[in-house]
Length: 239
Image (cartoon, rainbow, N blue to C red; front, side, top):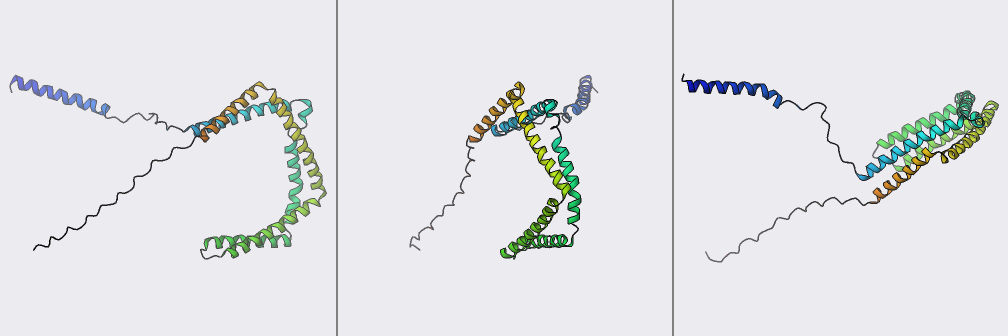
């Protein structure tokens, strides 16, 4: 082999070797942590996001203000009074409801209600069902439910323990309303809450303005072109 040919072969081999090393790196898959392109949000979506952020922020600040108010002596009794009263009422009412639901008359109304529900479900699947049939089944179920609720109501109102627990629950509601009013007053003098309230008002105004902007109409689809018809050629009359 001539020297010039030997040099050419050596150069080709070196180039092929270097390509085999560089090729995997050149054609390697992109890194797994490549950020995905962000989809541009509309002004309305951005405004709603801002309103949601402001709502969460206001709730957090109000909860903090409420905790501060509840530490005061005049509100310590009101703190948690509603939860305690609800728990006491449930404890008194549940045995009464369990007893009335075991009565044969109540079970009869319950059975009627279940049959009416089943009938309505069957009619809803039947394309040949008549509106009068649906109305009749719905009326039957509603009557049975009304009778069941009335039996429960009468049983609760005639029980002394439930009546006492209900009075405590009403008193707790008044305390809770007064506590809520006190928290409202405390928020009025809380600088952080007032700042967040102004941010909420600005966000709501921004959302209202964004929603008022008319949406651009989608481009009209081109109408299909009507194929032109050509008149048949006239006969010349010559043969």
